[in-house]
Length: 199
View 1 (cartoon, rainbow, N blue to C red):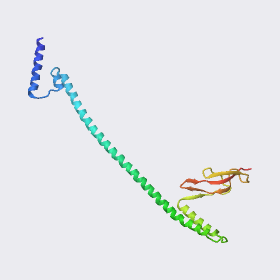
View 2 (cartoon, rainbow, N blue to C red):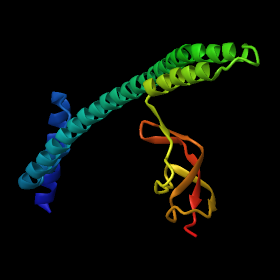
View 3 (cartoon, rainbow, N blue to C red):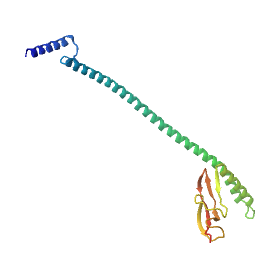
């Protein structure tokens, strides 16, 4: 009982000393007044909490910085996409203009051929115009799909219009109704053909 009273008096004196010095007593200080080992453990935990809080603040600042960078990068990428799309449209427009500029003379030749008198043989002129047109197609990387009679039918390049009796082997081309066209490995238009049924 006397020990309890003495402890209370010591605690009161310690409180008074803390107040008189103007220092704020920490939890570790208060615990240490009762148990030195426990006070040391609390002090260590308080130090770890302070370190973790500092780390959390650093990580939060880093996250804010990364988020700001990400937003800038996304904005830059969107602007790049817009510029690239505009540039692609300009290139396509110029390519189309170039193609039309090369096709216009071919059309002019056809118009001149039709302006000839009805009794004039225009075959040579038409053949010459066709050669000019084929040159333009060749410059654009377009190849004509024009199978010969007897060639095997290829469903990628040929559209079968009908099957017919023929002395040619079954499944081979008999006649070409309309040639096809291929560009850069892509079939733009299949050749329309008749196919032998082998009977």
